[in-house]
Length: 404
Image (cartoon, rainbow, N blue to C red; front, side, top):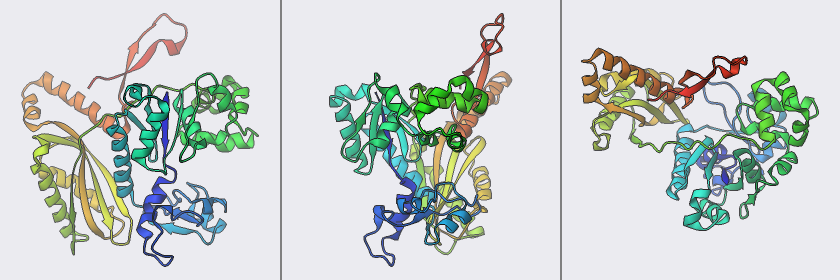
């Protein structure tokens, strides 16, 4: 059975934690969004659309992703909270590590939504309900959990569950259960999120009505997204892909008066030197890092830097990261540098350059690693000839992962 973990309004709760001492009193914290019209403000320099919204804002018709001007027109009392991507990323990573600490192989879908397989944990805890109880104890009472034979079915169960009782759907009644669910469930998938508005105009309200349209009709109207939506409504989904547990190193430094300009670049240089001097690095090079800052105006800023090749030279790392400091939307209070992905040790990397064939293979392997670091595991695939005599073009070749 697949278990879905849903932390509702995760980004909004993190942004509201900084408002514990505002004019409304000291007890705001994680439940500051209850009964109030709140929304996460757009990031400075980004697209002007609101982030997660509270229930009070939804009562006025404000939705996540709505243009800021339209949101303020619908709800003039809307309060905007400064976004804090670094804190959101750290809090979400702590939640994932808590699940992995109980033995779960987790697949994160997006911030606030993740899945894991409960079958392998029965021997440790006794059954699905006991596994879910342990997961709720490590995540807290805000977590909504549900179980089902597929990821999409588990998501529907988690959204119907309550803080103290989880909904579990067996395989026999999964399709009938999904048929009664609203079509708005498709918004939790990036590939099918854009189908909600056109399906609403067509009068499709439930997943059961979506099933009746047929897969061919949906494919003709919406393409791959329509096929995926029909598969999800019929209880079909791909297997879980658990994330790789990777080691992360980070260094943080208060910048003081060096909140911008060349002084901030010197603070960045100190962070790089400290990071490369850590014994946990064990001589490995760096493939990708995350540069984040706590802003003087409130909230935070976060930027991911992927190097074209694995680096261990502090000057080249500083040059690549200093270009991103120009994107800071406001003066910084603290700066943090975190390693997201390690490369091979620098000594091995240099030895490969002596042999032309080995160097070419190493560069290709490194390119595959960098591409997957930027766009995910499915970013680098190779075409494998399967059935050249087939009359169906889709059967000629298949895409397979490139080893590396």
